[in-house]
Structure formats: structure tokens, C-alpha cells
Image 1 (cartoon, rainbow, N blue to C red):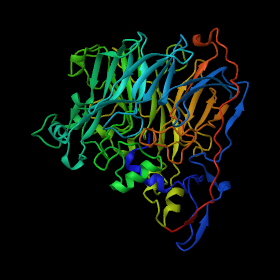
Image 2: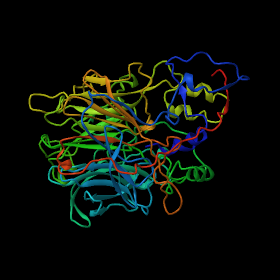
Image 3: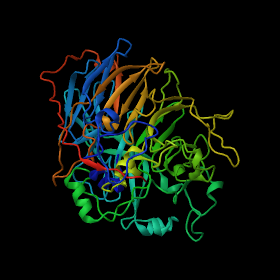
Image 4: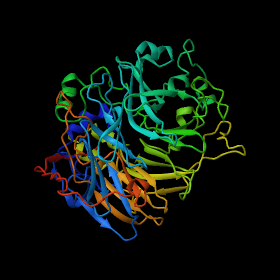
Length: 557
């Protein structure tokens, strides 16, 4: 989701961020005194706010099946046929942005509890609920307090247990004791992540049967008098607590934060003191039952981490035990080797990525990892990312900043290099491989496929790939030749509010945005004996009316 430090700037751009320049190398702009209007015909839409909505393409090459997803800031989960028609609906009293369909027809939803304290970084949840096909709640699990909160994503294991990502709040004093530089600790402290495995106890609650904590696997070279001191480059399987997390933005005032809440760009827990607390912002989790390993996406570090689930909880705290005999230390990491003191910034592979997954057994590419790489840098840019462009909000050079983004998104697939014993080696002084992904997808023109946050992708059994370009709410299926064979743009948007009147999840101008969608094949067991005719009436689409375009002042940067 959008990071809090960027949200106020994002709000200032609502009137002008509906589109950005399409050309990878923008033409020189006019002098500062010239006023230019944005023209839809020469722009690339970031939000897709004026795009045609609903079914765009339904080729006979598309995979028969149904797509599951949650429209932004609503309480609904929709099951959609390939004709773009809703065939089934689950509803709740809470907002959800992520769900999974079980073979028995039940739905597992990660939901945003209305009452949890402390955390405010997008993707907040606190609840897991299980619904039967008719929408009856059969299990309700709460996990939130002032110190912890499940968020973003869950993974259903073959034994019925559920893996969940949870924040773990540390006070400034606790962070300093772990070796964090005090100059980079917000007043509210920092939030690292942990993984919990929940054994459901229906109809209410669950037992935590396994845990892994980032805080147990840190290294730092800042203060030799504190814990975790060591040479970062000599400890590539540990996490440098002083790795910069994202791009620092200007501090916000309480007035700015209050404005963000009123305009739907942050939730009620955002404060001046917790800006920058969310160091890692882990946003996806996947489990490989054959390896008994877990992979997570950590966009705060622009990396993915693999950890050993075969450990006990006690072993997961240390550096020995489990199949790999490394305890809870990282088995593998990939995306940004500078974080562990290897290579340079030019070696960076991942940029704010989402939705890492193992490709299942029996699927083309089985055993490989797949990820949505959100915000890949265009080396010709004057600005490194969309977030940097937000820093020009309200300034005379804002037009240049937007036009100079030119970044793009890609889907990456790769096999983790292994030794003869199935371990993930790292060369002395080198980085974890591979140097490049084994397969990737970008748009034919590269720059028209771009979603700087949210989004996802997953492989289908026939070798096709379903992609969610989250900012625009666009779903499309590509075949093995990378041809688009099905395409749909979400037409639904809702206005669910928390009791204090604020939004459940920040959206800003991305009113059709979707965290993720999942395509289930037509022969999926959950659909056996079910009536999957289009519901009547269909949900009412949200029609956005474009305001008059603002005059934007150009200047040479």
C-alpha cells in the first residue's frame, strides 16, 4: 500500500495525477511562465480514472474460470466470470482487500478490524474470517494489540493452518538496544515484522503454533556496545536494522495528517510521531510444502526473504536447527544486495515489489519464484520514482516531475540457485543469484504497464499468467507468448468508513485500485454443484466524472 510519508503529497496531486507522460524520454518543457493543460491523448494514465471499465477483451485463448477480488474500500468479495459478470458475492461488516477460496467453497478473508490501535501504514487488518458459500461466518480470529497486528496477506497451509504476517512494535529504547541508529527512530518507535502460524479453533480464536521474528535475526555496524554488532557484509543471512527504508519524505504536521484523513488518504491511527515507523512493510507471504519454506516480500528493503519453516519456534529464534541447519536466519534473499553489503545500487533487481509466490508443483515453472516488480527505475529519468515526483506537488516544476517519471512494472520469475544438497549458497564476497530473472513480462512498449504500489501476478496451470495492475484496477491474462488474451478493468468503488469517519485503507486518486485478484479454473473443486449464473441485478458501477483539468505551470528543472 501507499506509505504514509507520501500520502499528503499524493493528495495534493489528485487534480493532476490522473495522467503522466507516456514517452520514456520526455520532450523538453516550456519556460516557467508558460501554462499548459494536460491532454488525455498524449498522456499515460496512472490511476486509470477515465479509462473504459468492465470487460475489455475475452479471447477464446483465455483460461476458463472465475476471478476473485475485493473492490476498493468496500465490504464485498466478488467472484467474476470471464464475461465480466459477477456470479457470487460475499459480504461482511468489515473491509477486506485480500481473500482466498478453499476447495470446499469456503472463503478465507483478511479483514480490517475497526478498533485496533497503534498501526497506520496501509494494508492493516487484525482479523481473519472464514465464510461458507452462503456467507455465514464459521470462524473468526482476532490478532491485534498495541504491540502487534496482522496485515497485508495470509497463506493457507495444506494442514489447514494459516500463516500470517504481523507487525511487531518496538519502543525507541528497544530499537536502540538492538543497534538502531537513534537519529532514524521515530518518536513512536519502529515496526518490524514477524510470521505466525495459526491453528484455527472454530468458531472463535486460534492457537499460535509457530513463530519467526525479524528482530531475532539482525545485524548492525553502527554501535559496538549494542546487540547484533558485526560486519554487515560478513552476515548476509541477517537483516541490517539500519538499512534505509524507502525514500525519506518531508515531515508532516498534524494539520497535514488531519487533511489526509478527511480526504481518504490515511486511516485514523496515523500520527506525527509514527511517520517512518514501518521499516519493512512486508506485503506478501507464500509457502512451499515440498521444501517446508516460507517466502515473504519486504518492499521496505526491495527484497524477498526465504526462511525455514521446519524449525521449532525455539530454533527459529537462533541460527541453528531445521532442515537447513540455519535456524531462523535467512536461507535466501534477492532484490537489493547493497542491504547486506554486497554490490552497488546498480545491482538492484526489485523496486517496491508485491505478491511473491512459489509456482505450484505441476505448473510450468514449478518451484520457481514469481513477483510483481512495481517501480523499476528508468535510467533516463530525472526523478527516480513516482514517489519522488510527489515531492514536486504544488510547486512550479510539478509538470516536469510527473513527466519525468517514466518508470515501469514487470513480472519476474526465477529459480533459486541451489547446491548439490538443495541449499542456497552465496559466493564469498558475492551476492545471492541469479543475476537476472529467468523469465519476465513487461508491456510491449514497456512504459504503459506501470503500477507503483499494490498489484500481483500468479501462474496458471496451462502456463498463462494472471496479472493485477493494482493502481488502475486492471486485470489481464497473458499466454505463454506474452499475448494478452483476457482483460478487465474493475468498475466498482465503495465508501466504507470507520466509526471515526476515516477510510479503512488509503486510496487517494486511485479509486478503482485493487490489491490483488486470483483466477480459479472452471474445474476448481469449490465450484462443483454450484450455480454460477450472473447475479441479478449486477452491482452498480461507480462512474467517475472528471473535473475541469487544472492549469499546470511548467519550468525547466
